[in-house]
Length: 265
Ligand SMILES: [Ca+2]
Ligand SMILES: [Ca+2]
Image: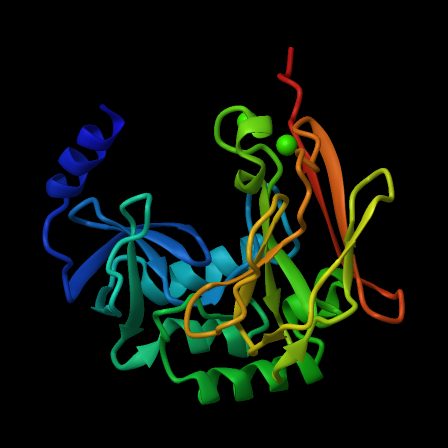
């Protein structure tokens, strides 16, 4: 039944437009076209608005100033839409790429999800190196001070977490401008329990997913990298937890909270 519904929805999407006008901007890397299509900007990741991250509003404002009410060109890789039906597009206005514009200002970092390689990686890495060197925007904050940044934290797996241990995962990005071997890095939960990462090279701007359960690590960077922590039971508390990554010298690399907000009375 669920499968039939998702097929029906997929057929509801029209062809992916190559030129369109931007109706509204949600955040730094997500906007809506005047035909109603939602676009996830390829090549870059900007700070979140929910949960609020430093420079999330600045990124939103920079993107709005760049694209809102304007005609943009949209280019696609081998995957045109994500699982939410959003277009994943390389976005330019008058030949100027939005991703480079954000990265230059320290309002986003290079973000590559294989098999799609989006944009001119060399140009974006050079812009990122400059922004980082100048401590511009996100690079002035603790969460981007080191080599890795957790871009999402799915503590609550789909359905019963005990039946779907690998549905618990984090996505972690190499925010340096060089390949990084995560051998000996480790992740801890709020109780201090610790799991060590394997020998695996993460190209700059690439992410690896960290699944809680048992599985074979995926180390080939031409598809999505993945680490399996090997726990037979769920790791992350659905109500509240904190993931912290340490490097091989036990220095904190990044920390991220998961919390379910209480309903306001
Ligand atoms: Ca959980
Ligand atoms: Ca669940």
